[in-house]
Image (cartoon, rainbow, N blue to C red; front, side, top):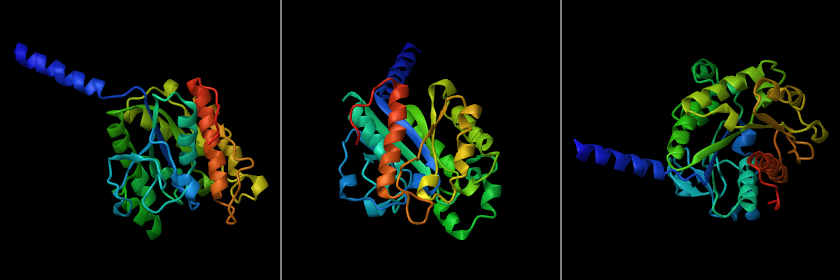
Length: 279
C-alpha cells in the first residue's frame, strides 16, 4: 500500500510541476475580425519563440496538427485565415514582459457568426438555420466551436495558466440589446468549465470598425461599451483610428496591428506591467 501511495504522490508531482506558471495563456474567440481577415505581410511572419499558438485544427498546409504548440506565425486561427488582433497582442506582451514569461494563444473563431454560436446549450439550434458556408467552417471544429475552445483550453492548462480572454464579435449581432447578457453566458460557462475565477480572468472586448472609418456596424459599439456593467472584470478596447478595410466590416493589416497592441496594453496594465515597447 505504501508503495502505491508513494507512486501516486510521484505522479501527482509530475502533473503539478509540468504546469509552468510563467506560461501565460489567453483564449480568443469571436467572428471574422478575431479569425483574421487581412492578409499578413512579411513583417508579420517574424516572431519571438516565446509567443506560441496552440493549433485548434489540423492544418497540413502549415505542417501543424491539432493540439500541438507552434511559434505564433500567422495564421493563428484556422489554416487559411489572416492577421488577427491576437497577433500583435502576443507580440506586444512578449516585448514588455520579463524574458522568463511565455505567451500562448488559443483562437477559435468563425466568420459571420452570432454570439449564439458559443452558447454551449443552444448552439445546435443556431446552426440549424446557418448557411452552408458557415457550416463548412464549423466542421473544422467538429461542429462545436465552444466545445473545441474548452477542449484546447483544458489541454493548455496542463502546461500553462489562463490569464485572460479576448473577444471580438458583434457585427452579426448589431443592435442586439441582449448581446451583453449573451456574452456573459459564454463567459460564465468558460469560468465553470475551466474552473476559473472571474475576478482573476479579465475579458477584453474590442470595438467594431469605428464610425470614423465608416464602420457599417459602428452602432454596435454603443452596446459593446455596456459590457463592463454586466461583466465586472471586462474591458472595452477602442477601435478609434484602427484602419478599416473597404468593406467597412473588417480592418486592414495596419488596423489589426493597432487594435492588437491596444488589447495588449490593457492586459499589461492588468498584469501590473508598464508598456515599454510597441510591436
